[in-house]
Image (cartoon, rainbow, N blue to C red; front, side):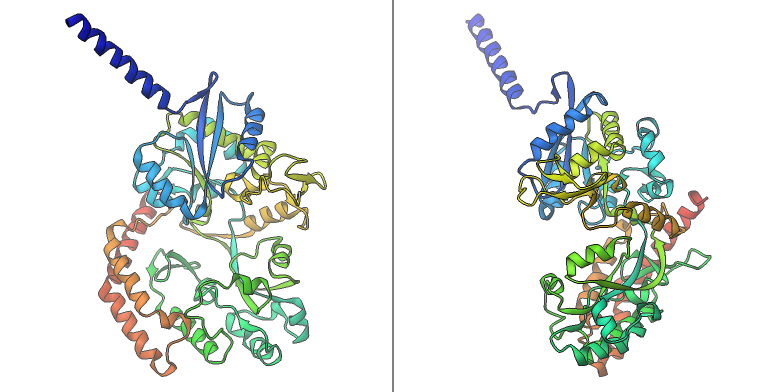
Length: 485
């Protein structure tokens, strides 16, 4: 009897092991480790074909292969939250300040500290990505992601069609502040009845950006050009910005339904707006804007070319805290960020099937190619290794590097505000801002603006604004003490 029980138990054990072995995901291909990489991108029909080509290119460079998994951008944050919290063993993932939030991921322990790994296995990255750009991803002195190096500097400004500027005698270089553009808005309103004079798309940034750098958008800022490290709520500048919006709304420069419309991209592409905002006047934007807005664009800059302390956090790749192969993952990131053939294969696919070369470093996409069009070269690695798309200036990357180099650097690169201690206050403040949204869109009754603004500021303080400012100041003071050199 005992022999039968033992045999049955042994058989059950064998079955159990076989069952789990069959269900487990393979971690190696042949004798090579498979590195799982989650990408914030619409899934592509030829995704696996590209993966095979990349693995062929890297086979002699690393003792590993890569397994890409593209996740639809709208679902990315939620899915990555589930994947990281589940403890799944994977290796690389996209993170940013807008998709699967980087700072939140760091605080939750989702990423590996790669400070030492970069020194050992990412030496080529360190040669090609400036130290201050890498430092933008540092949290409390530690590095948890590799920025996908691209245009990191920015300058606020407004765009208009060259034909309209010529028609109404507008010289973009004649303005020094946003208010200077009003005579032009009045002219196009009077002469272009089918157009909306001004696209409301940058809010208070036109007044704020030339002087302040945001630490917590909409209410915690640092003076860009001051010698101290004092954070503030620039009440008078914000009030001035929203009063101007109110004035322009009343004069009919801003669309009447500004408070309720949700998406005006189709109208913008159709040329409905005479003047619209832009946050980055990067080299080559004129050619891009011509495609996007259907005409020759001219640009009126406002403020200096500036590099924010967290600019690089818009697109990065991190190594998962659950990775079983962080050394290999760093080696792979080193290859993708420095090997142009590998990088461009991931970005554009296979020559002759997905794109055609039109010059040494220029390409055009094959029109009937529906297999691979990720349009995500900024999400995979160092964008300065990318081919130049047909229609853009061939020296766009050289000019962009010069643009980055010319920028005034934030003096707090490496500082990251941890909002956790004041999360309740931030939530309260957000609710107050929703309550007074009419102030920000210009739709408040003009005679009530001043009184409503005073109410708004009072409620901000009641919601905890001063506590938030105090916490931000304390963290910044501590960072200056420990990390500022």
